[in-house]
Amino acid sequence: MELWDAYTAAGEKLGFDLIRGEEIPPAAYHLVAEIYTVTEKGELLLTQRHPAKTWPMKWEITGGSVLKGETAKEGARRELQEETGICVELEELLPVYTEVSERNHTIYCCFAVKVKKQGIHIKLQDGETVAWKFLPYPQWKDFLKSEETAKPIRNRYSSHENDIEKILLGKPA
Image (cartoon, rainbow, N blue to C red):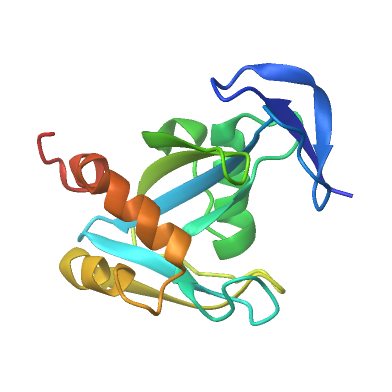
């Protein structure tokens, strides 16, 4: 059983637990961490979802639910390590944006992390992902907007493209 902390839409803990797969009460939210992983050469990491998951075989950035007792950053670090084998320090995770989805009672906490590609050994998590690839940012950007990627990832990217580029490419807002 996977437990999550319950939060208000403003990100304050409510003091009770949510259980994965059970209905989330009105006015309660859970955290999901998403991570844009970029190399020193501006290549971004995509992983392909397992065929048994929602959005089967679609490509996405790394992410997942933040577990009870974790901060969003701690959840992001854990998800990155579990799904890709990439280990980073908390201070390496740069906040990009936070988005509240009332429809699915989720607060998306997005981070970016810069990694050195040389020496990275991607280790995919069984049951989560089946493939991975690094793409140069312009190619990655076009690919992310394609039907081959999970629609929720495309939508959040489109909503926050300027924030993402500011962090990933050092562009002014």
